[in-house]
Image (tube, rainbow, N blue to C red):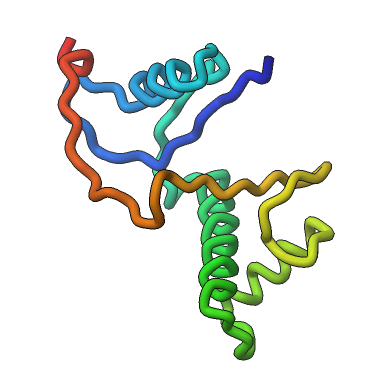
Length: 127
């Protein structure tokens, strides 16, 4: 079994509500395992780990968006970052795949559009 630590971009929550505990609990329940052993919220502006994760996610998203519109124009700054990341991982692009140094998987829900976000009130947070 693989054990995981989750690093979250910090968001404000009501007093007495632990986002970290909720993410850990909900993820473990969904996975039907206890893989997530820690979860911590951090300020992305002051944390290098979250800055790198944001950079990689942005590069992957940019490349997907360009592919969806069949864009072949000269690369933008975001495109250059995506190209450099792909080169660093010895890949032709940031497409889905699993290799020794990188694992990229696009998760899509039912349908092409996402439902709007909603506020979730849990009595668990209040205790």
